[in-house]
Structure formats: C-alpha cells, structure tokens
Image: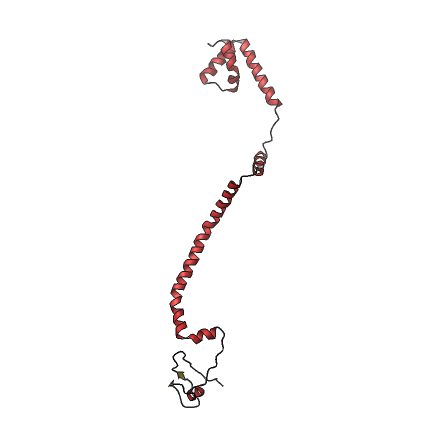
Length: 180
C-alpha cells in the first residue's frame, strides 16, 4: 500500500477521476483506512466546489452565433477575399461555359449549313435581296420590254399576255398583270 505522502499527491487527480484504474483502487483503499488523507480529500472536494460556484455561469444559448458574429467582424486579408471571390466566380462559371459552348456550336453549324444556300440565293437572284432590303425597282410591262429591243425568250403577242420572260443574264422577270 502507498504511503500518505504519495497518496496526498494523487488526491487531486483521484477526485477528478484522472488516475489509472489500479491507482484509483490503491488511493481509494488508502483513503478509507487513513483519516488524514480522508480529510485532505474532503478539503480538495470543498475547494473544487467553491471554485466552481464562484466562476460566472456562461450562457450557452446564442453562444455559437455570438462567436461566429465576432469571427465575421475580423477583417480578412485581401488574398483570402480574392480567393473566395474567384472560387465563387468559378462555381458560377461552371454552368455558363457549357451553355456558351453549345450556343457557339449551334451558331457554327447553322452558318456551315446555311452559307451555301445563302450564297446560291445571292448569286442566282440578286433582285430578291434588293427587294427584301426595301429598294424599289421599276418593272416594265411585257409590251414595254418587248418593244425596247430586249431579247425575249418567251412572249405572247396578244394584249392579254400573262407571262413574259427576259433572257437578261442577271435578271429573270415574271410579270403578271393586275387582276380586275
């Protein structure tokens, strides 16, 4: 069994439950048989209770929110703020990049498929583009055109000619008279 001097050193940790199981057992057996060590242990307990009673009780409710609020009030270095900004920007950019890529691909494919047809339309009938642009052209009636010396591919000699075609290499005009 340990001596009183050794046990008195272990009374504080014994009261707090910080000793190994075999040491706790040795101190407990000694305290039961020794009145001086038992009185010292009671002094430790009363001192511990007095210290706990005199300390202010902290409010646990709202403690976390108060700590987080104080942490938010601490100014952050520029490099950390910049890193957070760039991280947020990268998160938003992840969704935008595929959309922009899909739009660009759709535009390229549309241009690739439509360009040959648009060029063919522009080269074969330039007046359609001009008319679409809002330009006004004077179109001769079949009688005016045939008397003007143009080469007619097909012309009806009667006054009620319905269709006249011109073989002018840049323009093909189909003239329909106004209906009554």
